[in-house]
Image (cartoon, rainbow, N blue to C red; front, side, top):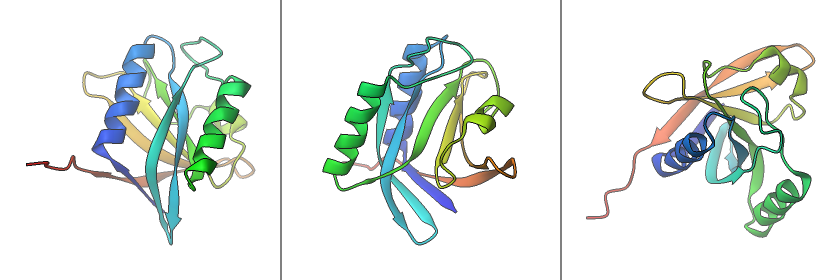
Length: 144
């Protein structure tokens, strides 16, 4: 599975994560599925209701409002994104335990280094298999 995202949307995730630092940032990703490709068309930065450096949680009302907007835009929920303020971009054991949707992509942005690192994962909670998905970042469009 390839996950496609524009640099513009990556920039939104990075900005949200930096604003939330030192806490974890989180949000939803939405778009379409075309064959073996997930096309992320919109990201929904959300408030980390847990206010934690190592956990995140969505406030139910805010989460529901984002899902309603996704449906109104005729998009599908594709997964979530969150940041790791001081650790690598890979799922923790706790995140594997809490992965609920076997079809979701889990984007993790590490702010551990000067240059942020974004990776995408598929998590099978039953088998505990974590597979990195190929993340294809489309460059910013030249508007000249």
